Figure 1 (cartoon, helix red, strand yellow):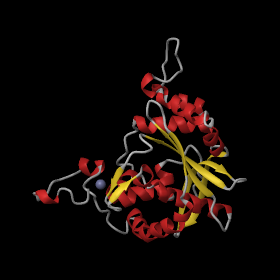
Figure 2: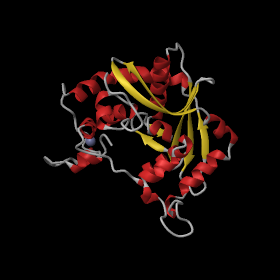
Figure 3: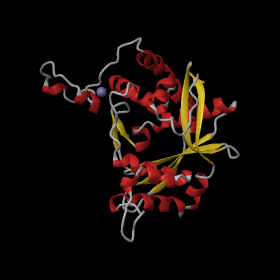
Figure 4: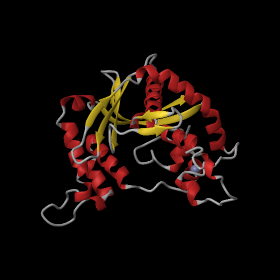
Length: 269
Ligand SMILES: [Zn+2]
């Protein structure tokens, strides 16, 4: 391991090639071709408004809003009485922050070290993670999630049932891997308690502190380790990546090779 991680290089392709992360693992286990193209710099997810809103909320709680303003001037009004404030379409971000700050339990859970970068070896390779809130005295950590609808349902083919955004976006896996990386990098023989602090992007934001992950950590880590060898093989170039033919990368590079039966359209979707 040679690359020392900083806030500047944490999300770089170089850092992503050297380290595994939860989002990279999710990418590889969703579509290998897309994950590899991203890693090689051939393809990028669009920096969407949704992502920017999330980054703004994170920057606020990290206390680095001034730098965020410099890096993302397009979000802020440049003239008039409201200069420096968020454009109307982004102003929901300020309401999301207010919603979390006016609540004493959310504020309590958000107390701790902010945006801590940790690395550890897990499953034979180096991993990196950035922990939104790490509270070592109270042996817990928290991740801030900005979501469209905290109570929305998502269909899961894997479970054959409706699931919440937490399962849909595989945040149980994220909490488990973070717990393990915190444990390994701190030399502990037990896990800190994970929590998700969720705030919705609705006009009047909903807030929740979500837990219950502790009993799933061991299982999630086992499931992750089962799939990790394939991810490592594809990432290293030892195995050819498979295309999912559903994601935006595959759609943008698709060559249709023949007809599909109309009864097969729902397979794998
Ligand atoms: Zn794909």
